[in-house]
Length: 397
Ligand SMILES: Cc1cc2nc3c(=O)[nH]c(=O)nc-3n(C[C@H](O)[C@H](O)[C@H](O)COP(=O)(O)OP(=O)(O)OC[C@H]3O[C@@H](n4cnc5c(N)ncnc54)[C@H](O)[C@@H]3O)c2cc1C
Image 1 (tube, rainbow, N blue to C red):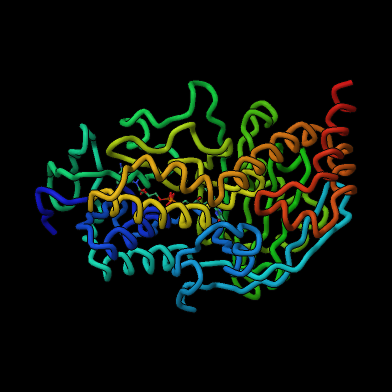
Image 2: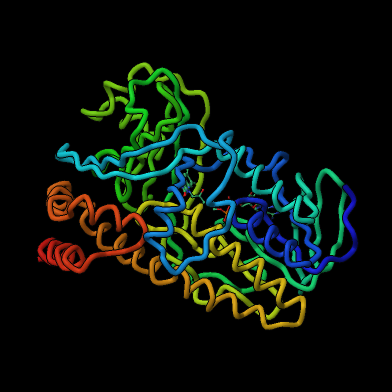
């Protein structure tokens, strides 16, 4: 596909954030070019694919306007529906609570989202990398040749190492960006609970994070670790931790011992919230590029899509001369800013406790399953905050 020389809006990145932004911008009448460097949308995957049901997201983020593609998507995008979330602290004293959601086939889901954007009128260019950005002109290279393309506005939905964010000065203060690294295997032939998401904590297995088993079928799962490298033992990699978890964890290892690894997935997640500014006069950033992630659990699909809708709507209004792009910053913060900030505070409190399994066990003792559930979506009930602060103080003394 040969692109035009100019569009109203160029969206860089066809993940959940970019495709949602492109859908809403195109639907509101803007001419939109959606570009991704991947040869095939959604492939390779960089996700464990858990998406809570829209009713769960809506209950926990009541101010957020959910895009319709978060509420309705084809069954073919679903690998497994889940009904329970189980938390396994180092003590092994399991806590669980009901959760409605699905483990998605992210490749199919990302393709569904990009298709919806294209059906609304956006042009899609795959295997095309944005090399540079000057004002609102981009240079690309890839399967369809090299191009210089102009736009009136740029939406950066290009993930945690966003080129758009760097080009537009929309980054975190030097030294303040914090990330988690994640490594996961899609495995078969495992003895799992096919209806439950399981999250395991313990500094021997996952320093500053958690290991998970997410069901993808009766005997199929996504098994992974997400950890803070700064908290890892010297010389021990994410792969070492994942293997240790699969071979040695007293509860998980016996069920994973016959695992056949079908796919290896790795990625990074920004876990310190959004930078101070996410929009300029001609550009904005969204999704992982803007730190739109629940820092306690790494859930990034719902915030990326909620902000994607706002990004697409704000950019198309700007094109019609009805407002400034900077309005985007206030709009997404009004819908979910407090939740994202609280999740960063909770993550920081948990970081302090994750240095010791004894403290972590104490923390999990004081948090009820109901409180755990709301913490998944960036809330921190007052008794939990006070309890975790007290444990942290004890730790420092
Ligand atoms: C291992 C792992 C497991 C995870 N599990 C979950 C989970 O279970 N549930 C959940 O909600 N979240 C999960 N997340 C987080 C979630 O995957 C992200 O938050 C989400 O994908 C963010 O969407 P996005 O559209 O902002 O970015 P992405 O999905 O990363 O999309 C960005 C796109 O931009 C493209 N791109 C980048 N640079 C350029 C360029 N210069 N030119 C052209 N294209 C470019 C990339 O190819 C990519 O397709 C996980 C993350 C990781 C790493």
